[in-house]
Image (cartoon, rainbow, N blue to C red; front, side, top):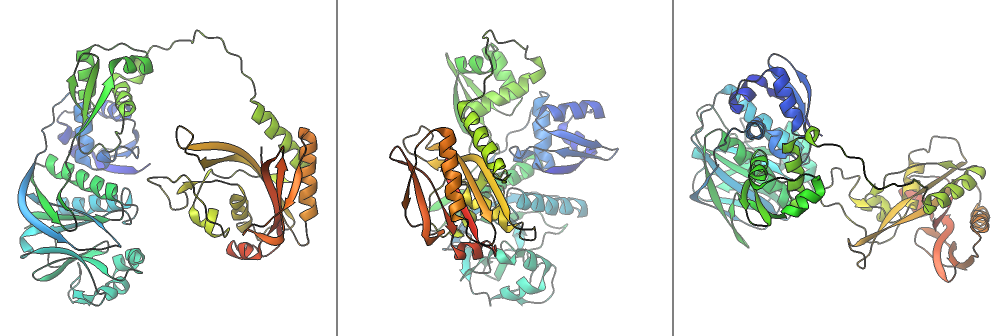
Length: 537
């Protein structure tokens, strides 16, 4: 979760009510955030990742102001009739643009704008990969505006420089170029915004010196580009929230390309909720006026009907997807400390699940064979799970991964063990490891499109052949579980040809064992033979 530092005096001024440190801390903590430090001038806050509207001080103050019952003005978007013509730019296909007018800037406020730009690019933008921001003096842009891909040899004067550079030179000669150049390096055409005077923006690297924001800037042209449409929209709407709270006039831009659109997409989201569901989930009865008051404190507009309510989420609340999110906000507004605890009137007795008993039995057996247990994340990525293992496969993917290391659910355990062995090549051999854990398989028959399965995987990394040892372990597991198993020689890309066996029980395939393909070992930088087994628990 991001930890941000705000100017305390500015925050209190934006809230519109003088608050003591203790009151301010209590207020912030009520909104799922955590105050880490308050000084005379600053306040350091750990924010939840879902409330990205609070990443800017104006949005943070708006949330706090509404929570204590103070009104916030509505932010409106006006038509500017400015057009950006978008050509095909595969490396960064999504864009959003807007115009901000009537700014009053000084040196301090310019620094603040640059700081906000970096915060949003680093967090929501995932270090500018998913989204990057360009802020330009609109009055210095001339004529028609195009977003296009061009040759890396085209030139412009980058921000902070006095001489023209080619785009490829920008990547090697500037700090931002060296830091973010890899995001576009392999593209045939590099993304730029151009007007009648040439390039004025080179996303996601640098803006031009020509359209630099100064204390004389009154109007700003915003460009947000990226590889993820939702991230681009999210970043833009938070900027609109910030400038709107500053009292600026916000104007839309028409994007004309394969499809025509108006940006920013400043659209409220209506969500319908059955009143009975609120009581069922929270265990409290609320009358209509109380529901309206509580949700208004969280920034919603509310329409009351007979048996349901319609909560209208503001355009900058990207954490609200369903009625459950609204119910959670209602609970936050009511205050968790105000719920009266109740003991359940159902008597239950705890008992270990059968699958845990079986897992413990297999665990003890493998430890007896001299194996050491490891625990790996259920999340992985395509490179480890499929490409390095020389197989194709389908997995449940994470829609908005926090890290490139964890982009999908694992469908088998062996890649996790291979990754573990690759990190321990300096440790003495033999290395005997195992994991008992869950995997998630795509399954259209299931209600949520996936099913969870418990598996056990063991591996021996040592000189020599341990094929027979793996078979012996499988037979011992089968003996302990009182099941009959059969073996069938087969082939698998991850294993040496002729050294791979499928395991069957009651006519159903339950696992496999064999010796790992040398190419797989090379992919993981493991330079010693590995034998492995994997069985459905």
